[in-house]
Image (cartoon, rainbow over all chains, first blue to last red; front, top):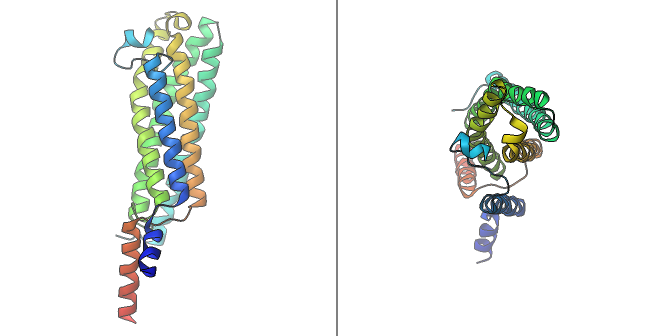
Length: 52
Length: 177
């Protein structure tokens, strides 16, 4: 049992990976909120959209 | 396939030069984007966005592609591997996402450069997009700085696949002994 739990903790992602994951998720949330609220993140589909 | 030391050093040199050069070019782009956002002078704004388009296509995109290519070759051709260490995966994901976002944003940069060349009023017509280019360049700078820090510090952490490979290679080494 002891060796099993030791192996599992070795395989688990290190703390810094989880921190990077949380920062990346927060960044995505900020971008989505900015996009939905119309603050920045302009329309890339058309030149007219970009100019709006 | 493991590269010879000479080839490995050549690929590593190309990767370091292209990656750091990409970061430097993005910082130059950010400076131009801030200048373009702050100025109310149409000729200055037009010159800024034409320069940004030139910088994007002649420096940023080639260095970005070179950085991604040499990074893939360098990781696959050395014991680091592509999915054995978490830092390599995080750096790869950051580079791929940055490359995709860069390619998406070449279109609006091109539109602004075209408008500037037609002597259209870019300050008034592209207010939102000008602010967005500053945000994009700032975000790209942070991501590329993070990738550089990862490449230098190489934080510990093997993926489950990396652990299996390590156990396998230790087992075969013991068997040979």
